[in-house]
Amino acid sequence: MARVTLIFGLVACAFLAGAGYRLWTIRNLNAQWHPYAAPSDWERHFGDVRQGSVAEHTFVVTNKSRRTLDIGQVRASCTCAATGETGRQLRPGESFDVHVRLDTSRWIGPVAGACEVIFTNAPTEPLVLQVRANVFSPTARFSHDRVYFPELVRGTSAQRIITITNEDAHTAKWRITGLRTSSPLVRADYRRDDRKIICGVSAQAPLGPLRERICVDVQTPTGPSDIEIPVWADIVEPLRARPERLYLGVVAPSQVSRCEIDIPVVEATLRPLVPAVRVSHDKTNPGKLVLDIPAPDTPGFFTGDIRFATDSRTQPFVRVRYGGLVAN
Image 1 (cartoon, helix red, strand yellow):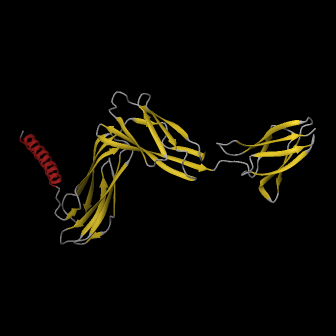
Image 2 (tube, rainbow, N blue to C red):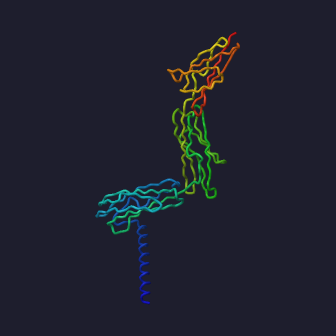
């Protein structure tokens, strides 16, 4: 019986010692104190962070004691990752950086993480640094993460429709409060009834690449936020033949008139509406074409047009019109 009592007493003492150790640890963490080192800040709160983004912060840890500390290990909890220069000595007054990354792709709501700096020659608890964030998801998905207008002809306008879908209609408590554009050359309008954003580029956009964005103001459960949608466009000159109209004058029946035009297409595939028209390239000038246009056999006025295929997405062809008078 005495042996059982002794074993029970030893177990109880061990349990109380462990509980006291844990209470001391929690009390030490709450006090945010370490006898040998001091960080620039003990805790970093990132505030509201959108789910999927990575929040980063660098803690600067300084040796405030009179002894040299051996940095043995820097380890982090499962919610974050920490890196620091280990295996070196930290002399009195020296500092080193501890970089902490909080990946929010797996979390939603309040998230907390911690990293520990262990000094091998310091008989104390590790130095604990904490990070916190409120991770939110607007539960909205946009049909376009980027809007692109390739080869938009200058002087013409174009628009795209961005559809907004809600994957969780029961728990979603977000709403769009406004739209902003980074330039007056880009316009955006939100249709609340069918949850669509109409995005367009102005016809006054200058030549060259256009790189702007739409800022969508969203009210989320954790506060206001904004989502950026890039709007890109390549503004090009309209493809025109010079001249666009050819007047052949007064010609005899079946007379062939030779004309030259300049067209900004190096290799144009001819799709003539009048099969009798012959086209040849000027070898010295790739952008110049030579047209042999025959007149009709019957007297009177005549007209026709020729189309040249292009490799442009917005202008599939260039048209040249011609006309004249066949004399009696």
